[in-house]
Image (tube, rainbow, N blue to C red; front, side, top):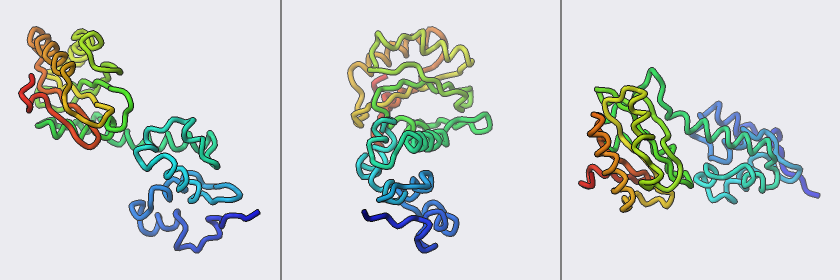
Length: 228
């Protein structure tokens, strides 16, 4: 039986932890960053090699983001504990863009919306509809999930959208949802649902400023397209 070179036996310049300390995390590959989380490998492969196999088998970073615990665990050397560590790291990455009381993003354009929501939504495998609750200065006070599933008029009722807006005393709102296909082109259902919600907002005195659709690195604004 052949054994893998342990990370502890590598030259100091080759060890991921030492390289991160010396040159910063940006100097490491994604598998090397994962290896730091894993700490140990198997008898045949060290932690870096296990991480490289995981990264390759899932098709890169996007696969790593969307993989379930079961999918992560299919790679030799990735047990339940390491799979949980990966999911935790991915979630921490997503939460870096989360809104805090001290940092309320200002929405001036659909591009601002896309920058705020792209990391959370571009890799989702189901549609998620969010409402961004804005104050009178167009700062985001809250970000609320309204529904999960294909966006239809029957699924997205104005009551559910504006309940959150009223709860947080919104001056206006922006809707955001993703297309798992990666193509952010608005569907007829997207347009019909948006127009229905727009009319409901007029009655309640809460402006629906825009509806932004997130794709894979791309986005589309119904307002800019003249569809609302």
